[in-house]
Structure formats: C-alpha cells, structure tokens
Length: 248
Image (cartoon, rainbow, N blue to C red; front, side):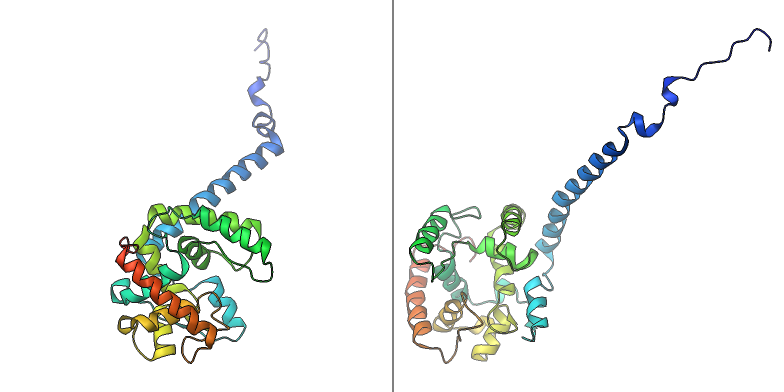
C-alpha cells in the first residue's frame, strides 16, 4: 500500500552457520560428541560384561590368524577350584583384594628391576589391569593403550567388583597356544575339569601365565617346576592370611 515502508530485514535472518559459529562451530560440536561417545561407550560395554561372558578378545582373534587354534570354554567361578584362584593371586597379584585396581608399590619395584635388568622385563600390572587389557583392548605397549587400560581398570573395579574381575580373568587369560580360560587349560594340560584341579596343578597353571606360549604346565621344565613350588608355598600364605577373601 502507498505510504507503507518496507520492513528492514532483521539481524536474525543472518545465515545460521554464521550465527552458530560456522564451520569451526560444527567441528567443536562434532569433537564434543565424539568425546562423549568415547567416554560413555566403554561404560556400556563394561556394564554388559558385568552380566554376560565376554565371547572373544582381540588377542584370541590375533592368535587365531597366527594359526594357534581356539579353545575357550566359560566356567563360572563357583565351578573353578579355589586352589587356582589362590595360586593366581599368589603368582600375579598378592594385594588383589587390597588395592583398587593399581598397585603402585609393585609398579615402582618393576621399574627399578627393569632399569637394572633390561634383558628380563618384569611387569607390575595387577590382575584388574590385565583383565581390562585382555577383554577390552588390543596387545600393544603404546601410551594410548596404557591410558585406555587405566580407564577400563577403574570402570571394572567400580562396576564389576573383585569377584567378577577374577571370574572374567580366569576365563579369558591365555594358557597355551590357542588355549583360553581355566576350563580349557585344565582339560588341555591335565585332562580334568577346572573344579577338579589339585593345588599342585593349579600352581603349574599359575606358573606359566607370564609366558604361556613358551612354558608348559604339564611335563614342565626345571624353571617352571621351581616356580610352581614357590607358588604352592605362597598359596598357603594366601589362604592362611585371607588374601583371597574378596573372591572366595
């Protein structure tokens, strides 16, 4: 109509991309979304495996492609000989029931040992750390993987608890070429089910954990026999001092 002035375009009609930060705004939002997913997704996985057995691990797949075979049989911890639990604690992580996923004293001792004897690397990882690595991560020594290992260790300590951590560990750890878990290992090395393991057999299994592709639990060499004897003695201390009470 005559005399009616045209309305000026409001500032709100400016391009949305400019109003919301443009290209870099989208980048920031995408990065934030990825960060949230990276934090939340592992929690979901840990919650699922709190109730369901982990079916396969990165190491199992790697060994399968190496032609090592695959023998993995899940066995509830109530059906695994307590002697094996005590032997594993004695051999791998005597303070398992005391720490919250990390044994800093053991880490310092391992570092000091490795500086003096670089040809014989000694690990300082707890059973919780080993479980986090075995179930959720790939075999590697990078800082990225170690950082993720620490994150998953905290998660399983909080969400799973000690008994579940031990149960998953005993069912996922490597015990020979293509052999994973206590049940497969017991059948492989001694021809018995995991609930029938004797104290000496349990010590033999615990003795080969550091190098399961090199050492044998049955028909063992002198070193494994000596090591298993020490583990048997230490298992007695674990039982006497109640160092496995959080599990058994």
